[in-house]
Amino acid sequence: MSSGAARLAELLRSSDRVLALTGAGISVPSGIPDFRSPGTGLWANVDPMQVAHIEVFLREPGRFWRFYGQRFAALRGKRPNAAHLALAELERRGVVEAVVTQNIDGLHRLAGTRDLIEVHGTIGTSSCLECDEQHELEEVRRRLAAAPDGVPRCSCGAALKPDVVLFGELLPEAALERASALAAAADLLLCVGSSLEVYPVAQLPQITLSAGGAVALVTIGPTPYDRDAVVRLTGDVVDELGAVLAAL
Image (tube, rainbow, N blue to C red; front, side):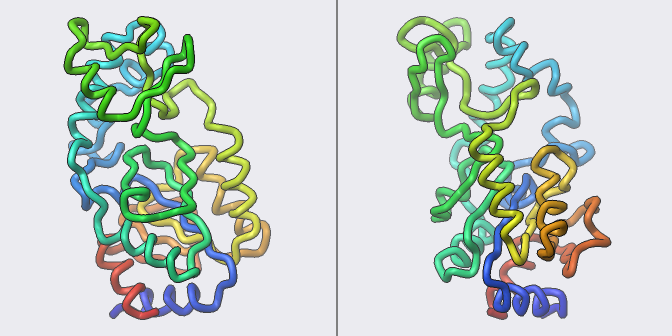
C-alpha cells in the first residue's frame, strides 16, 4: 500500500465531515470515455458547441439527437466500477457525508450512493420543455428508436430533452447551493477523477480551503489544486480507492 493511500485513510478517519466530488475520470474504468483526453475524449473529435448546446437542441433537435442518441447507446449496459462502490461504502460507513458529481451517467446511484448531488443533471430522465412531461431513460430510448426523424417526442409532439445541463444552460441552483454549503462545512473534500477545470463546480475546492478545510485529490491528470492538496494520488482510481478502503 502506498504511503499516500495510508495518509488519505488516516485523514478520512480523523475528519468529522467529508464531502466527495467526482468527475468523468471515476467512470472511465466502467468503459465511459472522459471529455478531454486526446484521441479518446468525448470532445476530441467533435465540437460540443455544435452538438450539445441548448441552442442546437432548440434550433435543430435532429442534429442534437444524432449526437445524444450515440451517447445513450454508449452508456447502455455500463455498470458501476469498484471506485463508485468504494464511495458508496464510505457513505454507508458514515465516513463520507454526500457525493457531488459532475457526471450524468447515473453510476453513483446504481452503486448505492444515497445522498447524491448531480450538479450537471442525469440522463436517467428526459423532459418536454413545452409541457413538462417527463419520461424515464428506457422509454426515451424506445421513442428514439421508433422516431422516423430520430427525435424522441413527448405526447404533445415537442422534442424531449435529456435532463442534463447542456452548454449554454445554467447549473441547477439548488444543487449548486447545497454543494457549496457542504464544501464550506467539510473538514475534507475528496476529489476523485476530476480535472477541476469546469466551473462553477471547480470552485468547490477553493470554498473548502477558504473555510479552513483540506482537499485530497485522487486523479490521474494535473489539476489547479495540486499544490494545495494534503494528499495527491495519481494512480488508477479503482486501485487507489481500493487501497484507501482497505486501510480504513
